[in-house]
View 1 (cartoon, helix red, strand yellow):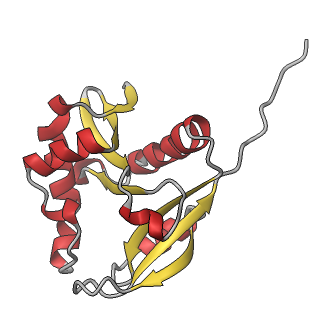
View 2: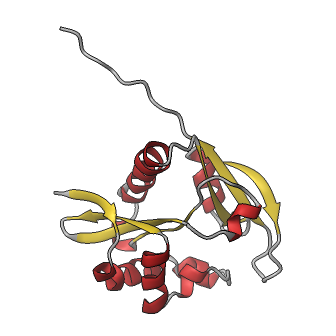
Length: 171
């Protein structure tokens, strides 16, 4: 089984649409107004070109995705890198792929490429398990806001990324 972590390309748009649409079913059921939940092919393509959209590909199939946002809107809350549109195809959920991709982006992109010791993301208070999932992964709530769009309370969470010491062998 091969796993490939990479930037998404426009040729991935249809696979990303399926992954995102299927993964965000609960978001639609909760009535949350997240752009990714109702994205069409044009919005997926815009996300790929306007941001840094990363994918985890397993045996040639895109199974998970996450976006490092280049939008300025979030900067009024935090100058830190902001990740969004995190999704794992339901056929591959509970196999650790989403967590692997998030770990890879945190370590190789946020900490490694950008040199940022912290990262942020947002989620809804009313989602039944996302807040707790991110907190188990080391994220902490630091801003609570109501965007006045019907989503209710949203939390901005941040995580301090720890540079793990390199183990060197002496011989």
